[in-house]
Amino acid sequence: MFAGRAPGDPSADRIRIFAPAKINLFLHAGEKRPDGYHNLESLIVFAEVGDRIELTRSGEFSLSVTGPFASALPGFVHNLAFQAACELGCRAGVQDGVSIALEKNLPVASGIGGGSADAAAVLRGLKSLWGLTAFDLLPLARDLGSDVPVCLLSRPCWVEGRGEILTELTPLPWLSMVLVNPGVAIPTAAVFGALNARSGTGRLRPPGAVESLWDLIRYLGDADNDLEGPACELAPVIQDVLNALEQEPGCAIAAMSGSGGTCFGIFHEHEFANGAASRIAMDHSDWWVAPTRLAGPDAGKPI
Image (tube, rainbow, N blue to C red; front, top):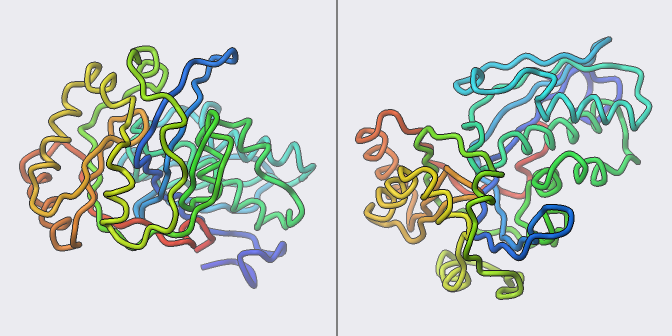
């Protein structure tokens, strides 16, 4: 329940925001740049599963965390969502603080943008809560991290550079999918450090209208995740996850998202996805398994 008239009303005291999981449908890496980052190209979409955040006006900045993955997060000083709130308050000259209540439902260091999605959701929510209608959040999002800008939009995007160059795409259809994480946290730096062979950039261009699963399959026919190989070398169980998804009936696409270790399977029908999730969870009780769908265009708006 909002304590105020509307989510965007600056007199409101509380707002709730959804932070959807980010999915890299492919990821091509170019050469390492002078700033230490690799140039990337990726098609990024968002899922209906994610973290939930409640922001409450306060005289100071604070963070509390609940949920199945709360214990895996670092202390609040190193939490990206907390840093996002403090930095936005500083740059926007806001005198208020905020109490952040984070329900951590996504695995940590899992390639689906959990920390970046949380930070982006806090920025969106505070812009509304504090009434910062004219404040441009994108420069701050770029400074916070490579995935924060696309998570700020939480819509299908063609992503270039180190993640700061975005081309917003038309919404994709409501495709059914299953996300699986085998319980291994893989630091992004370690995966890039193990990167040898790469596709390079410039092989693909942003897709046109994707109106069906078959359109997506055709588009991704020549695409890869260049980080999948290095991640599998660091954590061979990721290949077990991919094998488990690929052998399920109705699985059209199975791949790893981001730097891992979460993998996704896109299925022909939601019934296939639900069945696959049930069987994989039964066979691997220590894996995180989530049947879901690609999120709609309002995924990141206040709830």
